[in-house]
Amino acid sequence: METTKMKKTLNSIISLAMMAIMFSCNTGTDKSVDKDGNAIPYPNAEWKGVQGKTLADSKPDFIGQPKAPEGAPNVLIVMLDDAGYSNASSFGGVMKTPTFDRIGDEGLRYTHMSVAAVCSPTRGSLLTGYNIHQIGTGIISEFATGYPGYNSQIDYSTPSIAKILTENGYATAAFGKWHNTPMEEASPAGPFESWPTGVWGFEYFWGFLGG
Image (cartoon, rainbow, N blue to C red; front, side):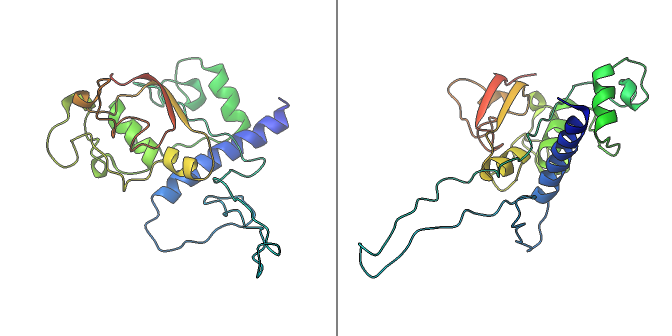
């Protein structure tokens, strides 16, 4: 991929990802839609059929499921456990990370991410834009307790970036370590509400639920 094209794509990916998270946290009443398809929520497809007085004068049209507009950027979020700004050289750290450095040079760097110093809470906050205690991920899932903020159980009213992108026509998937499902719900028998493909909103998951 050419450098200019890569830079434009990376900027679009990061901006869309951050915009989706910020949209998920918007509790206001503004339901405005960017009709050019440059922002989420994407506009709904218009019905192009004809309703005449008779069947012969009418023309059906199936709108179908929502689709992201042509040229919509891919969104890729990579989370590394037990790593911080002091690690990667792209943020001044001591570990040589040339690929991260190149992506940062061709895109954008954000420096105000508030990590929770533990993987499950940080992942929950990153995927929803919420404070860890608002969504029940105040501690890793193995240590979940029956108290508000620490039960490792978000509910269906909590939006996530996966849920928002899925509802706007994206194909979404999570891969690798998950670690945000209570262990008593992590067997093949379910229940599956707290799995990545449940309340978190991903369509597909390939990985392992535990830590």
